[in-house]
Amino acid sequence: MSLTRRARLLTPALVFSLLPAYGFVAVDLPAAGGSPATDPATKSDNIQHVANVSFAEFEGERSSGTDLEFATLVVDHDGEAETAAVERTFVFAGSYQKGLQIIDVTDPAEPVRAAIYDCAISQGDVQVFQRDGGTFVTYTHDNGYGAGTDSACYLDAERLGHFDGATTAGTFIADVSDPYDPTTVAFVPLPKGSHNQTVHPSGRYLYNSNSELINNAQNAGIEIIDITHLDAPVVLDTLELPVRPGLGTDSHDLTFSQDGTRAYSAALSQTVIIDTEAPAAPEVITSFVDPAINVEHQANPITLTDPRYGTKDFLIVEDEFAGAAGAEQSCPSGGVHVYDITDEKLPVKVGYWNIDDFTTTKVVGAGSGNRCTAHVFELHEDEALMTIAFYALGVSVVDLSSLVGIAFGATGVGMQEVAYAEFDDSDTWAVKAPSVDRNGTFHIYGNDQIRGLDVYEVTLALDPVTDPAALSVGTGRDAWLSPLEADRLLIGRELPADYEPYCLLGDAR
Image 1 (tube, rainbow, N blue to C red):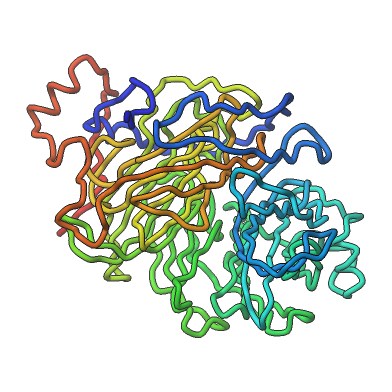
Image 2: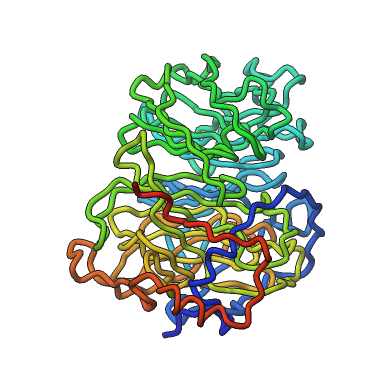
């Protein structure tokens, strides 16, 4: 089985010359036509595409898929007829303007659309949470986009007294305990918009990431909303974040620890670790800036035993290069950065990973905008696996059993790509899975801007994470290049006269 995407590898010794700081560029993406392709253009041998659900039949040619989450619910009907009560698994797939698509994936090869939460908004970040015996979702609308205020979610919010027609941006909360009949229970208007919304594990608080740029840095921070009473959400306060130079200061995305005592914010130009033991009154613990990251998009914690480094608390931060504008015209662009945060007040950079498709130009069709940066990822700590989307370069599954080092694809030291697939018309925003297996078969689900929901079957046979001594250390080198070796590998490559190496691992003193 080949795990090299294309025979265009650049030696890991050149990683230091691949991480310049670029400016932010915004572009409009053209619409795509035709039906989604059924066979990946490029893939590893251990992944198969098994199904697609297009959203394009709803108001336009693009599916406009964004984020997605899962829930397994007990249902006693299929939307039309009563049936025996049974557990079924549903995908809640967000979109731009096409509503929240609720899809039954109990049989992954035969996905069936159960319902659409009629909410014509843009951004469509979705979070699923349970409380009080029910299952709910948050669904976000950012400012700067037009809103379909005649769609059911706004009409419902108006009847609830939560929408007065003035502020369309914010977060909807819907009860999806019956996935065939989603029902609006609240709307939280937020003038700066809701780019991403994260639910505290208690189910009682929302932390809003508005992702405002530096020109809106005044009162930068994370809005805290009390949803103890779902019918009467209250915006409590704003957690102020340090003002940083660069693209912005506000939070783009935020992740809670499983116990709810910490939050980790990717705040455009900085990473912020937050004490949330008192979720209504959070406090900043640490803020740090990595000049190798262009746009901080997502930050997730994970505790693993690295074969060289031992058991540590790590933070994985993803760089959405140039905001996925597509103007970079080269691959790879934004990648994944790893920090040891065992000492929260002194994070240490220990790793970097990216895909191994090295091209000077990337011309991709179907309106994907030439973008091949990393985007939404999901960590599965127990199995030491990550799923991650790369827009035009589709989906990847990555082995996290070793995090320390520098690697591209399956070459190098540290994280290793173990499965991938892309279509000629891929523009995958997010890829996640309800469960994964290092040594077995499972399904992953990509939500794609052009294609809609793609279902893939993945089969892995990896070493167990419970035996660090048996862990694979990758197919590449397991030591730094000597200056002489690096010089030989760099022969024939012209570097700028003012080039200076930048150490990704930082100063360990």
